[in-house]
Image (cartoon, rainbow, N blue to C red):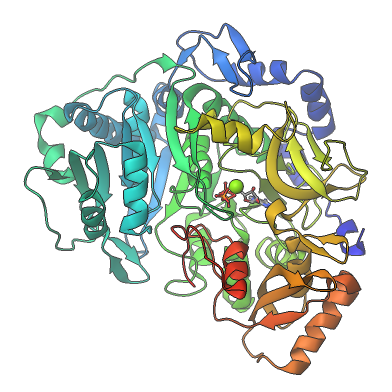
Length: 630
Ligand code: ATP
Ligand code: MG
């Protein structure tokens, strides 16, 4: 393997001294010996109103069930139980607006008051257990309240990222047959109002199921209110029905908690279904024992609640751990590219969890923006969403983390609900590798016919053990669930990603299986080619695709975003080619280059290579509902 992959960062001693899991080898071995016992012990750290009969019921596999027979509610553990301890006075949520002078804070006591208010209103509007409520809200505290309120009464939330078009919103509302949509008048996006309510109006016009729309006043924008269908939240909150205590419904462990659509990087988004019991155990455990979250942490996950990362690690995971959640409305570069660092400094953030797309964007602006801030409060950094190229990893580690904060690179999916492959802070880290399977999980790399490939060989990444926060099915499409994830290798979960394992058991995700480029009989991962390009001084970000080639089978074509100060030229293209040949392999030399203004990305910030490919081939671009820009 490349020498670059041998680069190893050892965890600092003070991190090990203080960690939940000091000896990760011992924990890993114990969990591997009996995964169900491991999960049962973790579940025992939470409250259940009736204990489970069985930890894992495999009788209907691949429709696995966890903690069967138990009664619980994720809100009991994320909110209610904290109210009986000193945590009731602790900050649960610190929220900062895009205009950073706007700040709202909520103790656990105050969070509960808000959630009860929302839950009372939902009940009064006739929302019943099992009903799907669509939430189309920006990154404001109300999205957290609304999600928790749904969960509290046993309703199922379907959060749609508040940037989707009316068509995309309409399709998702219709699919879920929601009777209620929760939205806001507008949201702030780089100083301008994005008209959420107008988009909802256009979407629900064609959605026969929608009976009510609740509107949060956020931007103060003028909107049209339908006298029967639409209600200001402010007005509802003043009514007697909104007041008073609201009991948290005790549900079956397997009752649905939410549906959530995947990012759509590789095709039509899939509606993933998660449940109360297993999901709470999985998100609670992984944030605590893999990310090493403590009582004293101020945790900032920059993801939007509209994505799984926001669900699991902005809302549920940290609240289940009684941590303090920091939430920012704005983007990483508005109004200036140091807004992240300003917030870290001012609010004393201790753990920052973000995405490679944000890291690469901020890196492009140079170190000076970071260096003007005191980031000494940080102790942990995290990355999720795409493979992080070693160049960006090193920058994050050195410039942001001052070489003392471990980077927790977490590989997981909407489907998995929780981390699956990650380093824990006490493990050595290798830039570009997500790390090892989480405690209780076993990952493998298979060839086409289901045999494990030798270390260092690329193949299909699979997960061998069921885990508590696994999706239960694709909503309304159980056949597609079986077909997509369980049919290729029966009994084993197919992730859809291509990866290698090295001799230390670390997993290197090299791209989507659909995106792997086959050149002259060699298989190259998009991440490998893109990382090689990104280590060239001229390159900020790159996307690699394979296009048909008469001789080689496929030729590599790259779309490259240049750093400021560089211009496209034939010489530069040749220099990039040489650089890839030297740092990766002569086989990986790109044939063609494009230098667009932007790369096509999902709204969650992932490169959509299928769109680049379709454009280059003049083909239909497929489902573009999640495309952010062109
Ligand atoms: P769709 O399934 O609709 O194509 P998507 O796969 O992008 O969309 P998500 O569930 O949001 O939807 O993303 C999961 C995928 O993101 C993983 O399968 C993997 O390809 C990528 N990914 C997430 N985290 C990492 C990581 N730390 N390293 C490498 N890849 C990652
Ligand atoms: Mg996927």
